[in-house]
Length: 130
Ligand code: FES
Image (cartoon, rainbow, N blue to C red; front, side, top):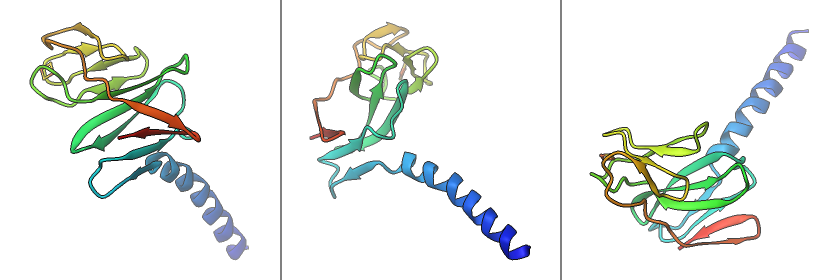
């Protein structure tokens, strides 16, 4: 009975940890961060994936309508890293309250210009940057 319970707990633990691991590790980055490939398989609609690209914070969003946006995550006001607010489908800068749309357009607050859009290509179920 003890062996059976231990095996069951191991299966439950693995079933819980594996999806978290897969969600957190779909990136492949070369040694300089010059090229990044992000699997779309583990990015649900409405979610954002933050990553580092060429030494800067970047973010990929898969909108609820399925469209993709790839942006610099560096606020254009004073350089804080923006946060994704899934329910509102917009970015909020935690430093001074700047707000951006999913395509980077300024919606409010002090940022003087939009978030920088980054070029990308979708190939074989992955977003390739760089
Ligand atoms: S740094 Fe983002 S609003 Fe000031």
